[in-house]
Structure formats: structure tokens, C-alpha cells
Length: 86
Image (spheres, rainbow, N blue to C red):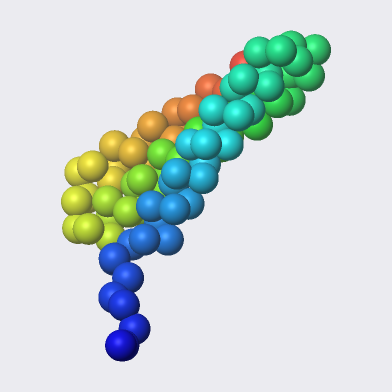
């Protein structure tokens, strides 16, 4: 048999799922390790990365409005999280 066709943008989907999983893990760990606030900061940054990946995926699909919305969400999370922590 020949090579199987991989779904388009499969790597973006995998990366997005990985960032969401990492966000959940960091959130749970952060709840029990409140003295280590950098874990929560990292969680928000990873969540922003997930939104950015979604935006890039939407851009590849030619869904510019949705892409812009996701990039704005990522930027807001990065901006306000950074302001709150520093």
C-alpha cells in the first residue's frame, strides 16, 4: 500500500491540543502550589499560545476574521497577564 494522506494542518491541531493539555496540567498544579505563582503565569502564556495556534490555523484556512479574533485574544491574555504579574 502507499503512503496515507495526512489531514491538512494536522501539526497545528496536535500543537493546539498539546498546549491545551499543558494549560490544564499547569492550572491543576498551580492550584496546589500557590506559593509558586510563576506556574500560573506560565499557564496563561501557554493558553495564549493555544489561541495563537488557533489563529494561525484559521489563517491557513482563509478564515481571516476568526484568525484575527484568536490573535487578539492571545494578545490580550499576554498583555494583561504580564501587567498583573509585573
